[in-house]
Length: 131
Image (cartoon, rainbow, N blue to C red):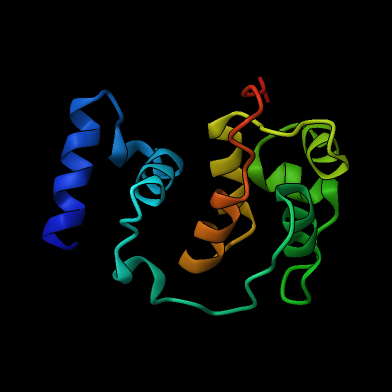
């Protein structure tokens, strides 16, 4: 981990973010908002980085040939309700809860670049959902 990244992680911890406990979403959003995504976070790519809305990307990653998950199977792997995935992909939930995004990213087995791209696509102008 670079010294710059460690300093930012420490600053986030001081602000109440438990970076070690999976607040990757907040860390990436913070770094991105400052234009400070360290290059080391973007060096690992094992697949296509999809573009589009958050909902479109979730569906594209879920259906990519190396994974081919149904909504139900993705929900099981992520530990969320099937309705949560359905609402996200249909656009009914525009900005899901941060914890939901993190577990979906983990279940989709995204690499660093894919994860960062997906995190950046979460709308900032919508209220955070409960799921």
